[in-house]
Image (tube, rainbow, N blue to C red):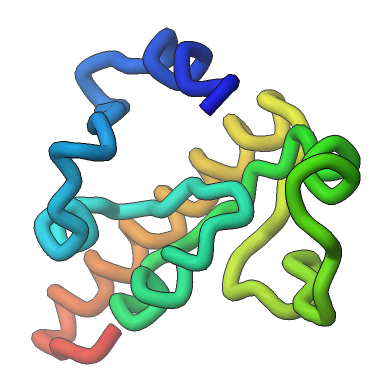
Length: 116
């Protein structure tokens, strides 16, 4: 929880930081266009919605040396989204993924198809 204050500082009309005690995942997932996470396994649940995911792993070396031992699962090759390590990469990738998703949704609406 050492980084939580950094996330609250990013909140604005487009970015909502929801306190853990208020989270109802099904509601958040249905309303979200993009998931940004770190190492959490929550991305498996979000993947069912076929929406874009980004893994922001700015502290990878510290995380694996102090908090968790590396497993056979490697986000870079096994996860369902891109891994970024800097705020600049996160900003660029977020905009790109949201644009791609928006185009996909618009194309589906034009074709009257419900399949994502």
